[in-house]
Image: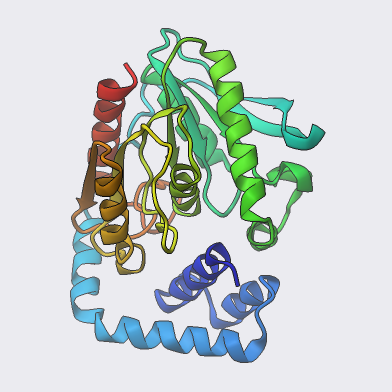
Length: 306
């Protein structure tokens, strides 16, 4: 399995252990990734064992976090701009689909990188929230070549399709997204924000060399094994959840790579927050942590994008 395939498989197993997926559904989804039954069963057992070892601390913290400000509106929605669907030229003559939201007064541009579910309504909303904060935003549908996220009626099938795409294609499509974003906000600095799987792709962009990025804010994304941040000038604010031990384990490597590259960087670890805590459509949404993360991201872009 590729690192991103392993990441998705572990996420499915974790969702099962935390009661978000039945065993049958978890095994089905792992099967869609191409994992055989013995390997899938072993992965579920391994994740369950790890969860039992950390259960007392994790359970208490999760309960405290989920109770905080449950009725608060999702951060950034008050001034959000409606995102529209567009297409633009991609690599090798391909056509890429995307969501686009234009700020009334452009302070910069932000490439939004979606989770492993594809270009969902939540990501469209986040794209519009950035525009409402003054940063015109573009979210590339990384399933464009497969017909687009909207063509998948089974969310698990969309995730499985993403897992089979070569990493080089992700990088090429995201770079094409940056080119398109730069065309739409000429003369403005560019940033990139990704969530979960998209957070990992944000790190992949940085380790692949993206001199056009002035800033990046990956949310709980795994840092590539052995990755080095080269040919990048981006100031990085990395966002993590304190309960997300699986992704947090890669934080030291990310910070060391940024230190070595000599780039401005900070890490924000949200208290009482788990993986995907910013997604207000998901079961791990933590409104207090999401609001603070949004505040920090907008402040970060204010410093490094304009």
